[in-house]
Length: 65
View 1: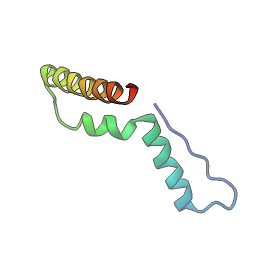
View 2: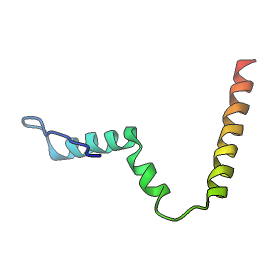
View 3: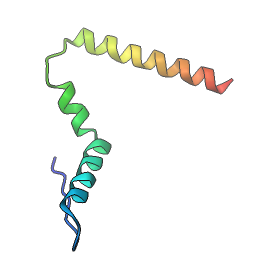
View 4: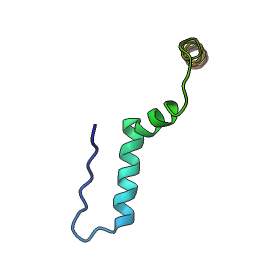
C-alpha cells in the first residue's frame, strides 16, 4: 500500500506534510501500525472487539430513544 502526496506548485512543505498526515489518518495506517507494534493474543483481540461493539451499541440505544 503506497500513499502518495504531490506537492503543488508554490506549496509549503509543511502544508504537504499536514495533508499526508491527514491522509494517513483517514486511511487508518497509523492506527494499524500502532496496533501491530506488539503481539496481541487472539482472545484479547476478540475481547477488545466485543467491548467496542458493546459500547457502540450502548451509545446507539441511548441516542435512538
